[in-house]
Length: 301
Length: 301
Image (cartoon, rainbow over all chains, first blue to last red; front, side):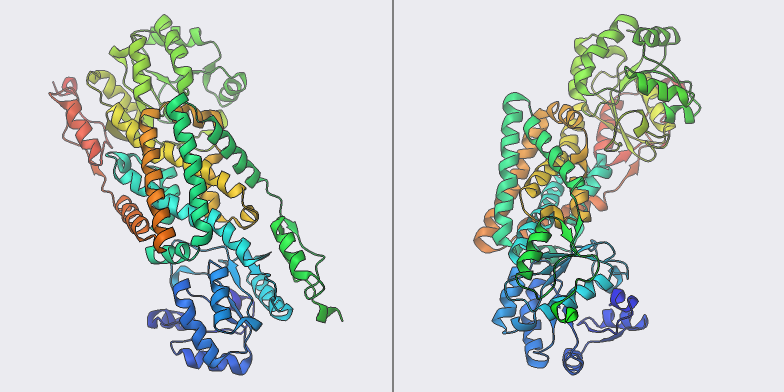
């Protein structure tokens, strides 16, 4: 809400938290704890609905939307995309749905954890699944760009596989590390910056971490298997030959590749043109981002 | 050298790197690439020698010290303590040796990576093994305090077990994470702050990471086993019951305990008094730090 208002958009919101709504109102935002009021108003205005709840709350919210605002364009910011899409399809709302995931945040949650520049420069994934509507896609793209994000187009399943590796797995490693150190006398006494950094995300609220990780088990289980395999091979090499060369050299090379990962700008795709979804997915996979609004077929006519 | 000089100490140094020595000299430091010159001068001045090399270089440096300055008080800043102590004993230099490890640093190395405030507020472990000399211990303590550090007294083996959990294991997790993500299309394209933080130490020079991790295999192998065990149980619970409650709840609780880990100040121990080493080790284990110089038996007489 802060970022959209800062971009000059009209924005109104619902939250179940009385305190959250009161805090938003005290900053001059138009917010309510009455969901049907918010959704009726959205339906009248044909507003773009941004669903921002953890996965376990998605089905109940979709039921409300189906009841009160079934024809509004709809996006979401939940950190897993395929399970949300499945729920949207189950609710019969897929025609005007385009999923999204801004890759930003802090270890804190609630109204006070946000700020207007939270999305600045962050990758904001927008789903390009097989049947997404070009007009709604353009709307969600415009919102993300207005919030200062760069748009990464991606298929929901590819997003989820990547999120398992770069977001969900790091959470589990941080939890396991904190727990391993807790059993060693002197460990907390000696821990310094690198341990604090490495376990920072273990400070996130457990229910939110569980919701995002458990909802992505299809991709997270193989990612855990992969990391266990790498650690197990390193452990055996260390125990047998006192050598960690394989893991450390390859890990350093991978991190170096990440540091120099090229971001290119996507400029040639026309939203709604033939194969536009496939082209955007391929461009996103290759490191492409959208930094200013792509044309759509309508806008070129 | 920077921190000691900033505290008003006379300091001179040796490094094998011509560039490093030239850079230090250009900042007005007294430095040489001639090791026998530096050690002869140290022997004449009865200077406290601070050995600051990675583990693989320790034996050769100790041979030089034995040849040219065998009676100087000696400490080190290598990130593993028991293997250094073993080498010191093998070189016959244990009488005036007290090991140390300042828990600070960056992902960079060499002269340009340091600064005078690098040790400010950092835990600086000083070994209290069975036979350490109280006079040398006091000298090393005074150096650490002059550099702005807080002193954590610890036995070498306990230090190494803790370092495996809070420093060496995090390096391996960062390497394994970088490598896992590198195999997933779209992962680097989506990676944001939390992935960058979680893999930051994988950017450290592989030879330094190998030296410190491989030198601590005795404690690192069981730490890897523990983390594999935790991840394996979490993986099975996720695959079977879609639940990560056990790992995430316990990891969050551990991280919360770390955040509130109490640091107390050690003030009552007299260095050189009966059982002073055991008392310091117990106090360090319980979170105690030395923030201003403890008295020694000599200074109280």
